[in-house]
Length: 301
Image (tube, rainbow, N blue to C red; front, side, top):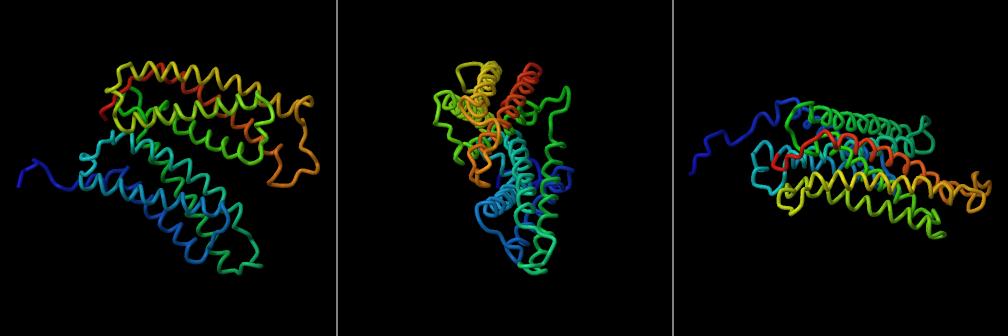
């Protein structure tokens, strides 16, 4: 057999601070969805989403630990540093969402009508869901780029913000499809086009970084990303002005929530969510643009 000149197993994948955090992610994630599946229970789209988050994050974490422990990640056509950094940020956002949604919709202080045992399981699952979020956040903190450190792009502030921007865009899309009446005016359709365009390009940037293919492009990727980020700021500025005007101005919409609007099925609520997260993403793109001036891309890490 060929001698690789080193151990076959990477024990640092288990014993390093990041490795220990990943083991905790796996443990807490497995505990959370096991508690829910065994006795806590879940229902409707909210519960299904939470279970998907915990099982998905658990599966990918097991994959990462296995690949690093056995050195199999060297056989993958991925920029491993970019992949793990991007996943850690995505898992942090998904897990904090699940940690808020599950107790909000499924936990109650009283035993009636679900029974005390089910209530206790749901409370325990909520506690571990919070721990899942904390350990994924800890990995982001440990692996983030330090000043002067040469690291992968997705570990930088700009790279991490790309994940957050895409995640916020998904929240906007969720509100848009929930009877937001965005097709009522051409102006609001323009806003949807802005959200869609920026989301697609952001995902493409992340995909090129994770796959490590940025060096194969026939144009300077880093300069293109900065130019795109500047364009995204301008586009989101237009959406941040247009959407509130055509949804909440009395000439086009309603400045106040209609009294007869049903809870959970009110277009005004969806429009408000879109407006809020439009400003959130605008702020994220502005911060991203500021940090983009201070980094240098390294595609092979």
